[in-house]
Image (cartoon, rainbow, N blue to C red; front, side, top):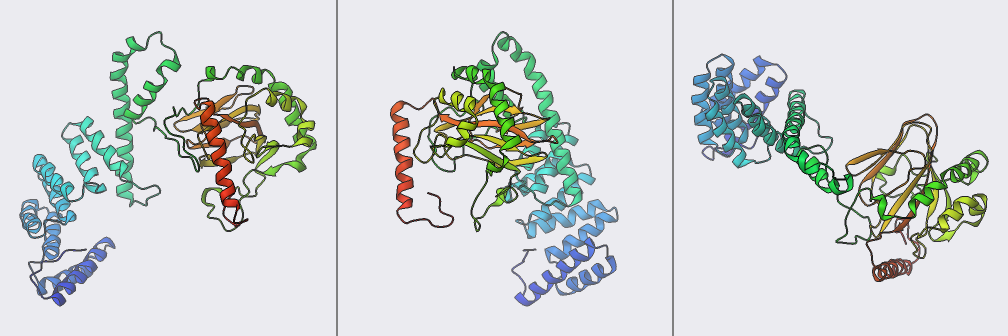
Length: 440
């Protein structure tokens, strides 16, 4: 409660602030008699102190004398013009008096002090609703929601107002979408989804339906590339031929699960002592496991002999080739009721391919703002440096084939440069030997 008058001895000032802090606590706990006692003690030391007068105004308002409360609060904000709670109290009294224009001006004064103050923004948006301006209210509610850090605790009344804000913003987006639909439909008519994709995602963001996610590589970020979440399949002429082999590849994956489970390894296998964060539950866990056909540029001969049709299909595809990094190709096995948390890959110089093989039920995958369900034999290519996550919501393991390819937007020279740079980076780190927590 950083309110001082600068006009009283420091000892008295601090005592008044301490007493009024106690008043605030007792009021919150419903212990009114103790609150009155401390308030009166503070008033005996400095009756004109803004905190003392603020409590006086609060009690006047509770007693129904809103006009007197407003008069007191106007004096309080004049004495302490930079303390937002006083402006909020004045706005609340003005609301009770039906002085909506005055309340709006008061809230603007508060926002001039703290432009991202959640309560002020919520109160302003609620006022705009009351004034018959729901579209403007949606804009301010959006600003309020943007101030919330992930997982923030909110007192129940504030949480209820925040939930109302979310509902209001969504409804406004729906109405705005309907208004735009009639204007845009003639231009959309006859166009393909690919031609419309970028505009539709831009519109989704304007209407609050989806975010636009940018690549966030953990290693090499190659700039100035189109950052599609899912790449247009027409750009990969070999994809249909791969899909045509889906039944043979699925049979080999089923054989691995039936007779070669001992060679499945946890896909997440970080050393102990690292800040694992999102990977804590899956680290060294077979709930997400892999059966590698190629790993870090090395062919796994025994596995490829165990799965010859899969190995042959991979040989027809231009996979990523970086010494000690690629190709990498594997059956990804995700156990029943398991979630792979949101994460990003190492570089957008590559793209990742999924070929769904064993789908015992609902299995979902999100890249950026788009969620899809895997369907047997329907492959896709995506940028794994855009945040993505996966769910197996079924009661049995899910299996897909995963491998990497070069991003086709890179020229031959750019591929050579990226390959050489990644090798050089690894050699530079390796010169000091193996150090826990330092990858090479």
